[in-house]
Length: 524
Ligand code: HXC
Image (cartoon, rainbow, N blue to C red; front, side):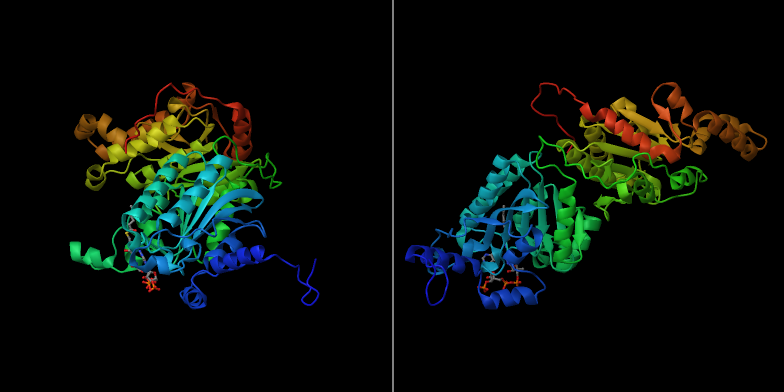
């Protein structure tokens, strides 16, 4: 019944008390701190959730949780929602669990109650089989709570690992992320950083200076550019928080809710039989002419849409999501414009991680091959290209999702084997007519095979050119491989899209029975 004067519904004193408590929790660190948060170019924790999720879909849990800690006067302070807003919501209609750290409440620092709120929504995500999204903005372990806050972090790390491969986990870094706190995002599937306002590091510039004498600032040490381009820690960079939330929504669209499901199809209305004159032109380029592999991906994909992952890191390999006939597909492609598309340590790790993710979440893989081999050099050998390059091989060999491969041009040496070849259980392997599948390129092969003959030849250069021509005619083609059945079909480049769509349709029921072992031993 409404109040006669105010016309508002009458509420009991108990309900009023509850609403007052809620209002206090929702006020965060108060107007001054919220203003400071805005002034530093950051949104408030609740605003972030509102912007990310579907309208009116957020259901908060644990708003009234408070710390039990009493040291350093914590018993006399009220920490709204203990510095983290948690709950579940819908994004594009799909359920997700969310936590959003509130920097206005003690710098978003993580005490035990704060940690256990995060743990609760992670547990809920596992129970319901829905993705977890963390919006991180925190000064790290709450110093006043000592080992309790360290324990709280460890509880989160444990759950990150337990949920890994079961539900997708996405971390948005929207402020500082320091010390051991970086390891929760690092254990999740994707990290997205906002340019200019987010930083991740194990030790800050001051400690770096004291320990190593190196001078750096927050940005060069752990800004979005550093982590997306150099270290590879972050898969995505956003220009603003709004852009960050847009990217998360787009990314989620390609993913299933959990490892027992497949991503929902999304029909863009693109013709599955669409042929491409652009691909034909690429295949007719001179062998030494480079091309943009992204253009090849766009031509194959529904609606020419490609959602690239790890765009700025190890650009010699390109990874990301497309849709084919509406189905979500992961793409791995060598990029001839960077290091001639050769595989190095970073590319191997980037590719392996992406393949592992797709395999864990039933996303089929399309591999586009144009690879001259592994990148040579002392730096690579001493950096562990043998151990770290093996990760890519391991990831492909272990993958049990449908694997369709197209050799666009070069597939040389060990890299031919690695890039989803038939031998490591590529399911359907195509090649363009211009493909060159061989142990090595013509020049290198002739130098080794005919070393003695060339040394004795009257005109070594003329003889070399003849031998290279002979080698090219015999080996630098897809036909030797096709003869052995290592290539299922040599296809016209213009028909690549319809061919791969049919291949994936055929493979939809693929099942691989794993050996009854505990788990393999990936070369870490
Ligand atoms: C308690 C903290 C805090 C923390 C910040 N605050 N970090 N309180 N524990 N870890 C409080 C500040 O005292 C301040 O409170 C408010 O949050 C805002 O902080 P400011 O310093 O005023 O903000 P700003 O200038 O923007 O600097 C942000 C910052 C800085 C760069 C994050 O606060 C900072 O360096 N904090 C410590 C970072 C850190 O070393 N954390 C521990 C990492 S080790 P008032 O009341 O004054 O507004 C770690 C271990 C995890 O996390 C291990 C897991 C295994």
